[in-house]
Image (cartoon, rainbow, N blue to C red; front, top):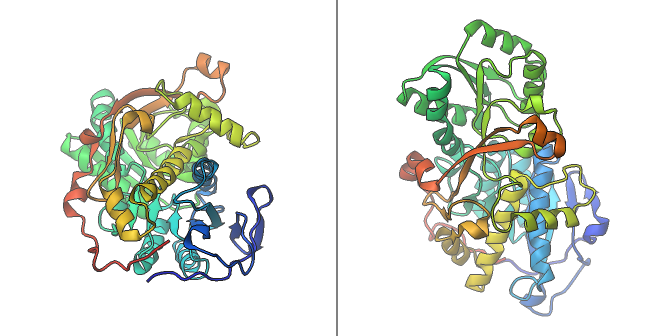
Length: 433
């Protein structure tokens, strides 16, 4: 399906973004009933499918800021293929049904060239089904369920975050050796929580860990004492959590209030920066995974942080975190792929992304990254814990102490890679952005 030029809504520049309907915020120098003299006059439109409300609202905002900075950098150099890049955002509300409606509207009504954004894996899966129907490339920037690059993989979808299996491979053996073999699982009761817990359980049991219990926590839980009482009664050596977003923030606060941060030991496969930013340091207990940290002593990191500070001087989160980083990297690599193939044709761009390799220097990580056969970016995985009090007192933003990093090969989700099935190129609708 090749898109035709059509009338556009009236959009404002970034400095004056306006909400024109419930859940839809539009950006860019667009004009109503605009007619394009040639294809190069037509902007490349990126639809941002990230949460602005619900459990992952804070992460959704960071995700968007990363995308916006990458777009700003390309536009400062003249855009892509001689075309300016514009974008719109619609709130996916941490709700799969809303995600489907947003994707459908962006593609059929707003004629989005590409879709980018997700934190909730359930929402990402819903968006990707719509994107595949129309052949629109969709970048899942920040959700980390193994199913996103496994059973729910699609030809048009590319996953940019590490997943639960990657983080479990980096943490489980070390936690068993250092803390003990009697474990309890604390799990958000939805897709990402289930998949992440499943990956942790499989690896833990392979290393001789005994899983003594698993407590399922509904999304939106704000009262954890009943669960924490069960933890105390079970007396595990390790609590392995798969709790995300605002739920994770509340859990951490209540664990700290009860003085349970050091005993038992806690591991969290992944800790997103927006979920802990600004909390007291004693809330940041245990060992957790991340894909990036703004204090890494690597080429380009300081300059990247400076660009963030210059673009977002009044943002509540003063430094970029892993969610921002993933949104930025996904957008940058998509637009770079469009440049390399000199086309917005979806099949050509898909094939280019499928062979993507990015140097450690360009990724600002310790190891080179590459796109796996399951359409997931294979990258360095970092394990971290809370920084020491002295460093934190000197810099309230320096919350993480990075303990170690694992190369992509050592933490590959080989099960997803082996089992993945996705649509053929021939069965994917041709789409030009």
